[in-house]
Image 1 (spheres, one colour):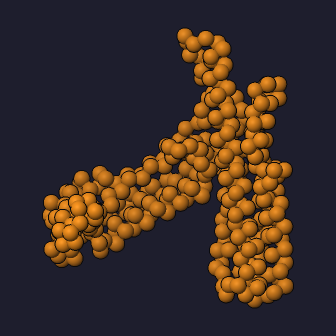
Image 2 (cartoon, rainbow, N blue to C red):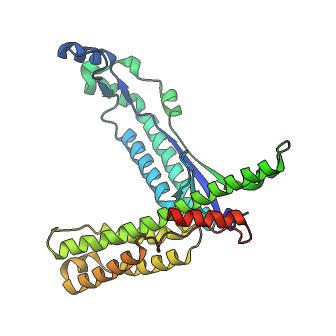
Image 3 (spheres, one colour):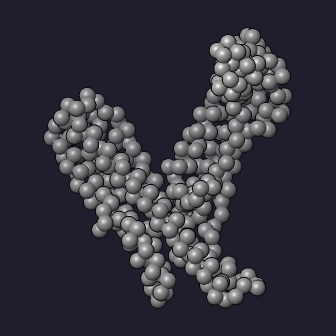
Length: 314
């Protein structure tokens, strides 16, 4: 089993929310009739609780939670699983627990005012209001949920314990599984490199534009985004790649520049531009400078083929 199996875990968040949005069939039909359009040409949707700050708070919290998960992990597959390092697992789960507790608290706050919000909707929606559109409070609350599943990386050796499959077929399936896992790890590492390269090159490009007066201002997040990514990079460097560690350490030095100094002091700005451009050039993916390939045992002929394949794809 590859070393990264023991140093990484997979996470899959799940968030469900009552959108309080519904198609108004009667109004949709009226729109078709009044405009001479065929059925289905246009639909009218209405917000059942357009003035509920408690519902909006839940929706915003859920969006922020998804963003936090994205920032703290790397993509694994299309079904929502993401990969992160075991070394950060306990801190990650503590933070996830805070997010989920806050979500539940906001749901309870919404439940406490749901009846009043329902009554307020009679006036805010006026003729669009239809009491049948509104579930009972218990049904509404059951529509909210937040979870975070955790599992280990797939064990590609599992095929060897399956009875009834010829040994040569078992070996073929094992190698296919290994290749699949290795390719996903490589893609995840490519994402980590890309994120860091993105914020560094953004700093360089923006400061050059500011220096040339092509833009009049820039936000503090120009530096803040680098700082935030540097902080989480130990969780994203799932292979503990030495180059990525080095790039991260260099990027951290860019965080020493205060945004206000970059705006007011040309000398400081030019120094930051030079450093950011130099790091961006070092990180820029090229044929000879790509995210690291995944390493498998050196005595495996399949491993050699896999490394060759990855090299070609890079």
